[in-house]
Every structure is written in C-alpha cells, then in structure tokens.
Length: 397
Image 1 (cartoon, rainbow, N blue to C red):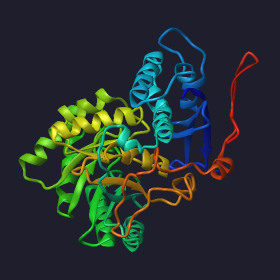
Image 2: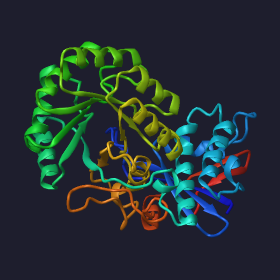
Image 3: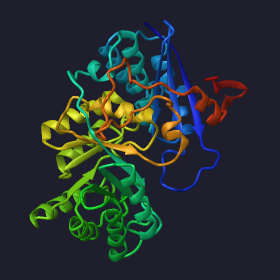
C-alpha cells in the first residue's frame, strides 16, 4: 500500500470568539492510499499555519513540506508509520509548528494502516488489550459562580462521575473569587464526583499564587490543579510540587498539554514533579510520539492523561494511545455544545457505556469515521498560490 495523497480540510464554525475553546475550528487531515482506503486525523493548532507546513515551498534541506515527505511512500506496517513520522520530522526540522501539523498525518496513517490490516490502532502500537477509562466532562468555568454551578449541575444530570472546569475567570480575580468558582463547581457536581481545575497557565511563574489555590482547592476535594504555571517554567513547577507534598496538601499537580514534542514532555515528567502528565495527540506529533510519552510516564510512575478539546476524531486517537494501561484510568472528554465535537464523526463516536465508561474501539483503525456532511457544512475554502502557481486549493470531501 502506498500513500497516494494527503487532503487538508479547514473546518470552522461561522463565528469564532476569543473564548478558550478549541472546538471552534480544526484542521482535518485525510491520507489516501492506492488501494482506495482513507485514514483520518486532526490537528490541535491554528489550521492555516498547519496547512502551510503541508504545502509550502522548500527553503532548504531542513524545510521541506510534510506532503513531499510522505506522498508516494510505502505504508504496510507499524514500523512504516514510525519511519515516516521520523522522515517528516527530518524534512521539516526547522518548521516551527511541525509537530502540531504532522500530528494529523500521523494519526491518519495509523487509522488507514489499521483498516488495511484489519486491526485497531491500540493493537498496532503494541497493546494487548483495551481497558475502560473514566471520562471527565471537560468544560470552561462560567463567568461567575452562579453560571459555573449551573454548568456543573447539567453535567451531573448527564451522569458524569468526573468533571474538569478551566479557564474563564479563573485567576483573573482574587483568591476568594477563585475559591468561589471552584466551590460552585463542587456544589453543582455533588460531593462524590471527581473535580479537576485547569488554571490555564494564569499564574505564569508565580509559585506562591498557585500554592495558595492548591491549598484551598484541596479542601474542596479537587483531584488536581492543572497548568497553574507556564509549560516552560519547569523549575517553578518543581518548587510548587515540592511545597505541596512537603505540607501534606492532598492535591495533584498536572501539566504537559503545552509540551509539543517528546523531549519537552520528558523534561516536565523528569524535572517538574508532576503527578499527572497531560498530552495532546494533536500537538505532540500524533499517536507515535504520544505513545512514547505514555511509556515514559509509566516508567516514572506518573499518571498519563490525554488532553483533548477537539472532536471525537481526536478523542478516539487519544484513547488508543494508552488503552492498554489499566492504571491510566482517566480520560478528558470534551462536553461543550460545538457541532464539531460530535458532528464531525456522527453517527460514530467514542460514547459512554451503561457504567459511564469509555473504551478504545476494537474495530479496524481508530474506530470512528468522519462525517463528510459536516466537512461540507463547515469547510472554509482556501487557495494558496505564489506567482500565479497554485500550491493548495481546498479539495472536495
């Protein structure tokens, strides 16, 4: 089987706001093979910047686009995907958003290979079984405690047993304001649900501010405080984690979604004192690299959790990565109302069972199929040319 072509689809809602919501647009990647099979992937990044990485002219030997690296190549085994992911990295060594962009192609190659070989991706990457995970409803804080409580109540009514609230006004007011937001989330969810807080890197390198919140949030039964500091502030993370542990504060420190290549993730796991490492398969370069992080997390005794705030195409790709690790039992599950969350893969998706759990599918590939009607409805048409020569024109779904 050979890669015959790579198609790029920029999909977006009619109106994009500044809300920290990654489900408003996306870059969907389709890998076509010469035996008529399609594989699908999704990137978590600016769609147009990522598209450029697939079609831009060569600058020199270390800036060659992803399509040139992959089209025409043989794809017959898991080793081929790993080889081609490495080749794309070598061709695009100096492309700054390469890992975000190539993630879509990497996911799509695993998907089409699974279809070709009749195996689910989790088996292709070396897992022998697929363990169920507890999905946590991932939402944004409301603009105030009352709105946050209403959101939490609606999550409880949907029978989620865990939820994560993030961004919004968190960290933009006083300590008292932040505690009120988390208290509202706890009140709406009830005392028995897991509650996680995503601070959206709001405190930068301010360990004291993050620690004050960790103490207060622990009293509200918060499982972890996520991204309280910027990803690159590894030393500050370590100071925060050490202080939390030294004082017996019962809350985990989580981070890693900003790690957009393997070495960055390894640095955080090794040196930041994380309890949970959260990796976005659509940012770190795809399933190939995310699996490396999951293996390393297990070696270090850190809990791997996916970061996913995209469609069920990304949810599926994410859960295959750590399907075989029973101890990694939590999974982020975007729960907003964007039609790109569910509609992009309707009617298929990664849905909760009667116990409220989800599991990586056992069907070939990722186990979900892209809804072409959604692509047609939300596709933004793009035309890129230089000196009258067309480099890219949006394909038909």
